[in-house]
Length: 587
Image 1 (cartoon, rainbow, N blue to C red):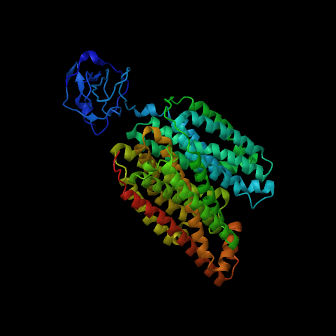
Image 2: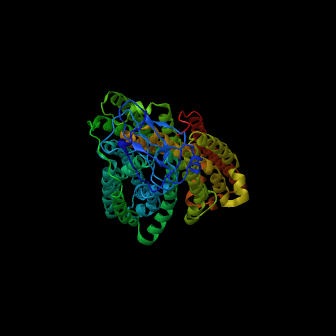
Image 3: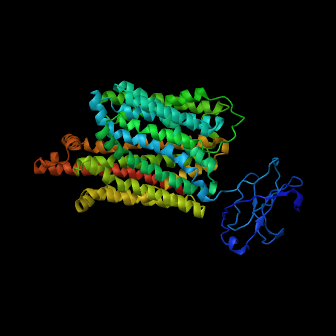
């Protein structure tokens, strides 16, 4: 088909990228090379791209792409760039190709996307350092754990709601709503006068925080070209890990010098800044097919999540009464799950798009997110316990000794994102990385005692840091797969499913791993009691024991940590299996 010049128009582009493996093309094109954008004279043709110089084709390159997709064929040359366009689909009155922006321009959208994620992650960790001060201020140690649990439950329930509403009413608009709710609830948390009022305010804060992560992820998929998603997700994962590291340190400093309310008040200036930045995000057209919201699905989903998380929290405490309560909660959760699946199959506008989640690559991505959450949260939980009880590290030393783990996880995520972007490959990196991580965690399980004998308190952190470089390869790929497979109208639902999987996996994983630790310790009642005292008072408790008792207790504690790290290695092994069988190999 010939291209009529009277249907052509010029598209000036100041910066150009060359992608899809055509790296040598730019060097072969003379200065002034251009592409022509032409509206088709009649329908029935696919999209065709030709490089032209002064109206004549200079390279036999032709790449066929579907209408409305990214061209992916731009040259880093001076002069105007034009595109030859022929499509079988209707062309708008204002024609123009969807062009992948150069990477530097993407940095303009990162701050309004990353700051809400930073707020959400920091809030989940900064409060941990202030919990003892809250318990002392309110005189209610037993219920202080609800300050954390209430936020987790609310944010988990809210995530799919924000995903669905964001797809229907606009993600930027819903992000602003979530930020306003989060900041307002932070003020209420700082003003709380008791543990019950603080728990209620934290629940409200969780309803706001649940949207920060999900909507930011969806906005990333909306604004970042598909080929750049790997690098973007690597940067995002590094920000998440850095936020997790920053939270406990900042929480300790703020609590010590300004009191526990300051860990909530710090959200005010950051939240207002996030709102101002969010207003800079490009506005998108709102879907005209909103449908009816799936309220029965939301109710059943709440009935599934809340009892499940309550059961996990109860199972961390030994006792017949708590085990009976946990079993009852699990029963209610299972019943609601069955009813939820039935409802989602029948709903016209389901809260969870089961057809999309049934796709092999999509459910594997969600399972990888769950295992990644279980991996990191279990390690972050076990390491401080070991440092406090076995190595006698202070709170400040624990924060320092945790930096290698969190920093190297972020490094692994960054490298994985960079490799995925530059090679177009996805599955191979977590497949290899998680396999190495699983083997490394087995070495940790059987060699942490020897490493401690050689390196002292740095032994276990050093081993985990080496493993974490490979461990960080899974989460960026899980997010990229979900965003690549989801249609534009369902990016929010896809991001919500991954975030939900990560949250549930984190809660379930840490419960199983800590349960494995104490299951071994409980085989020797005396050793379990000594270990509990060591967590509170350090290894001096062990040193005070007679030689025979000290040897027996030390062996039991080592066995407990070995079993716990074997459980962590199992999560990495499952991740490796999922990655090796991931159908989406390239992007």
